[in-house]
Length: 324
Ligand SMILES: [Zn+2]
Image (cartoon, rainbow, N blue to C red; front, side, top):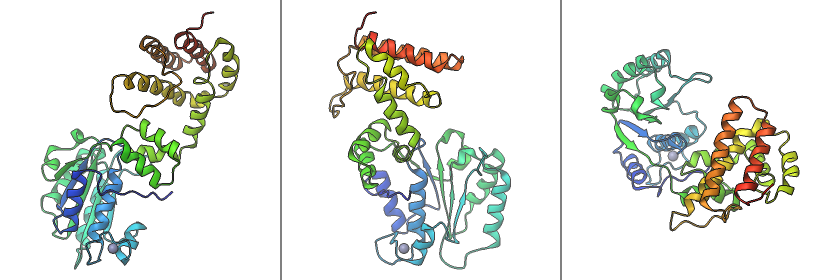
């Protein structure tokens, strides 16, 4: 799915940086730092497209010029990417050497070249050292845009050569807007923006995740449906073949409990109606303990069905005060 993302207006940091890139004040080496899932790579792509766009208007990237068309299709000859190869956790020294030799063999006669390096913390120390050399004196037409999800793993000597920009998770309403822009229904958008804790990229990714929605529906028809002991057999039956999504189900339960607890101490939240909203704090905390236990049983290979049944009993007992 090709995603629509608007970066302007997301924060002052985003806006200042976009202005600098538009107004020929782009730093030659930029480091975008921040937690995973906040669309850093997409932002790096966007800034690269601004640099490469050949339109002479203010509107960059224009989306109309040849350069824009090429970079949108990942086919721009002056847009180079470096990231860990599929199946590998790190960016290796050989990859770095290949990149550097192609930069020096093909010096630019005109225009600009953009080198985007994703998650530089995954570079081996050797590769980081090799990169360092080219960052010390970059060619005047070369622009580096680096991203990192864990700045502490990046050599301080590299960080000191970059303009460091720390990006924060998005605000909830911004994630909501982004999802609506991508034609996600309002109810799903509300839910995803609530659950994603500002991780806009995760929210977009979850929308495509069939397993997620299957688990969500099942949780609603089992754990969140029961109110009485007599509801347990049906719920238990529904959970019969859910071993492969057990972790997701446990996450939903945990999130629900945490959201219900948090909402009570936060003002100015749009009220989320949970089936557990009326339960006292103590009951919710007991359920959280049961979820914690369930995870432990799961890792010690207790059958998922009996773990799920235990949880069903715990919910009816604690949340709905059923006796048996
Ligand atoms: Zn353009």
